[in-house]
Image (cartoon, rainbow, N blue to C red; front, side, top):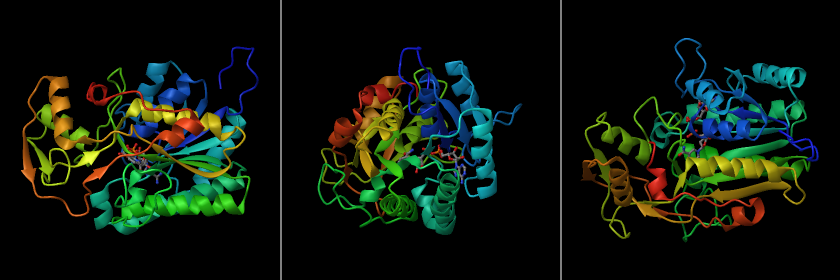
Length: 352
Ligand SMILES: NC(=O)c1ccc[n+]([C@@H]2O[C@H](COP(=O)([O-])OP(=O)(O)OC[C@H]3O[C@@H](n4cnc5c(N)ncnc54)[C@H](O)[C@@H]3O)[C@@H](O)[C@H]2O)c1
């Protein structure tokens, strides 16, 4: 990490980021580069746009252009243990050895995971097993894991805090894969006290970098509300389908806790800093959300105001497996990580 010459030696210098070319990963990479960390990215490019000339992920070229700093990129799949091991070894020869891994790499579509569950378990669960093996072989025992509010399943009470049961009512293979990986990390941390894992349970990440140069641009049909709304606004799709208007919420549409991508990325930096301080040992889950719920129609309204266009939508029947409302209690992250979301829904709708 960068030093002004007077600071004590920082504990983390080099961070390996799996899935760093993706939506959340690339925004976090920008923050890491800005923070002076050496960054090594591993991504198999299964869900990112490649630059036509260089074949590198476009997001990472932009992250470097935005920050004026370089990173090291490897087009490697985390399931490929030999290639992954070589990445850790090369890092120790060329820059600093890896101090910590930020683990974003995963497939993330709920609907796709129901169609090809084994692909999801192989990629998300077996991929994490391969990563943990290589990390252990290279004596790297610190990880920040991209988890999800889906681990809570159907909320038994709101707001969701970290003490809420997990794994019960996880209805789809994607959510189950996130839960299984958390369980694996829990067992690993209790078996080997040298391991520390911070599991960040994201609520609903939205928005884009303030430069407008980075954002969520899914290769296929968007699975999430905001990118879908954005595609309707620019005419790529005719209208939004709102699934259900008869939920027990203020306007009958589903309520979620949206979090700006910039706040989310910042949460990873706080986790990284605290990871090495005393006290945060073992497996630690934290909610990253604003703690406020917004309905689908509130989001549509805020987005219309931000872009100055009406967003056409139609009401469709509820989707199986969808829940009425989900929002978190984010006070634990504030207490332990010194992190709290700053941006509101209006800001989330800018630069999409
Ligand atoms: N975006 C969300 O709404 C959301 C919510 C909760 C949790 N998460 C979690 O956050 C993480 C990042 O999500 P995202 O929205 O940035 O997704 P994304 O698809 O934009 O990014 C994931 C990246 O991982 C890469 N990848 C996938 N499998 C890989 C493998 N086997 N080896 C190497 N690279 C691989 C993809 O190419 C992609 O660049 C995921 O773990 C996801 O489950 C995301």
